[in-house]
Length: 246
Image (cartoon, rainbow, N blue to C red; front, side, top):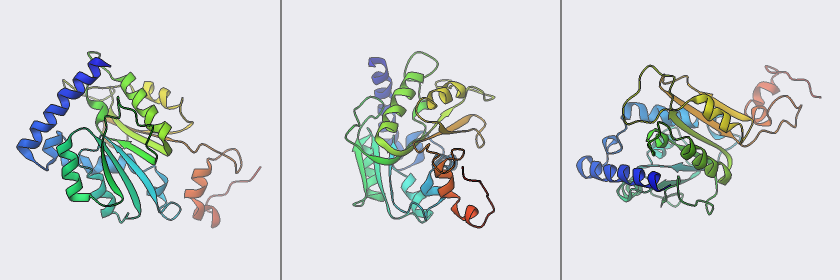
């Protein structure tokens, strides 16, 4: 834990120095803007509110390691308005800038290191974390324990699901000073939390997004997740999809 905190503080200091130099810019977070919005899509695309806004018009999203909270801009551009947002970060400058751009009664920022701090006082429907686990927090070439403990905390507090990304060690290249992980190992962990999981490596060849959903009920017929039935209600009603009830 001590080593993890030290690495985290080093990265936090770097972000602060970046902000002094670049201000409100993706450069402050060492994150290219051309891929940032795509990552938002990848993180959200399997959540029910994103797939079927009519069945879930209101929701609360926790953005763990939020930076400026620019995922709000993406959601609002898509027309999402009736949602609440909790952004967690430790860089005061990032959060203060985020409040200037997105602050409202429904959007709040909290100074919290979700990888080490207690978050048991928070409740939300969904949680996302982007690029948090690409940082090497230990001398080891991976962050498995950091990922597992952090995601487990988010999953415990969420009502519906968690999504996060990480760099895969199956890609064609690896950048020094960056953490890479075996997707199989992380998928194995995900199945300890739920049977309704999606490991997606279809966008970036070097990056995976893992979504873990809490709703793994199959009460309708025992063979299809209830969540799938809700999202695709129209297809079942017009008999595009047909499933016999048990």
